[in-house]
Image 1 (cartoon, one colour):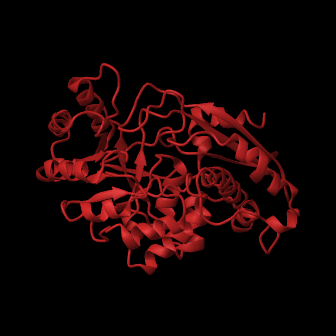
Image 2: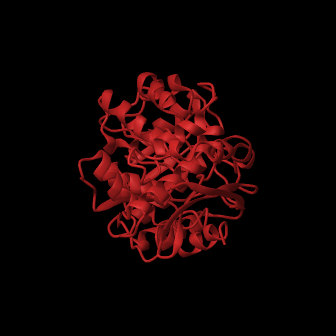
Length: 388
């Protein structure tokens, strides 16, 4: 068996929304299709992948380095020992050949995009949902039958007043979410407090609301917000400062006793390890948001989970960024603490399979081979164009 082709395209996910740091008016994403010569139901098995929101499409890196390395490799070097399926770890090593360590940058996004498609193909060839394959390979067959998800939104938007913000959150609650997330740091502290209090009126308690500063604050501002947020007992206070400023995160923990979250902009096991070593993160309450689609894919995420275990962290403290089906499968198959969800924004990539209700903050997994993209009709309509 062999990979016969890898197709890619760039698709817009542009929107007028903004967080504290960037707007999304020119945002796009890469989509890839890994085509194999394995035939199921009369058609070649195809694995699909894409990169998470917040990082741009990776056309150049895919076309110039990572796809050619796979296509030029001996097909046998990309297979498992039995020769009956692809080996994601060997394909990952092929993509990373001739790359220096460190300086992960955008290449982690490009590799993560292809890695997602490879795992989708592997699970389809094996005839299993990806979460079940992961549980069988890495968790002694134990998989979660449902996964906690929270609704991410609350972006700044032209003309969006408190009533519009509350209406958005009412929609998420009506959909079945028990925890919602909103942006902070794009207005003054006083304005953000008014927004927070407006949302709490909808969700009932601070423990049902997470806030995200998207790395906007210096230490002084981060502490000012921490002191103002403390009385609300929020679900978490996310990414107060620059993601690589571990000292800021460590010092902030001295001023904020409630849960904090960060990690979505750390793109390697080594960066994640530095956060654990130097960022003052607390394994009994804080959350880690590493996103496989941005950080070299699931192959690297497995290394990150092993590192966390070695440092006394439970996988249940991981709740990945991205709001996509790949992380949902990882959460169910490897015992994570939950997953982000985008009910409204970043379509068609955000959200999960069609007709999958959120019940008391949890979703169940579709019983179909692979990641389950085919069960998300608008996303699959985009993906299949790559091979039609």
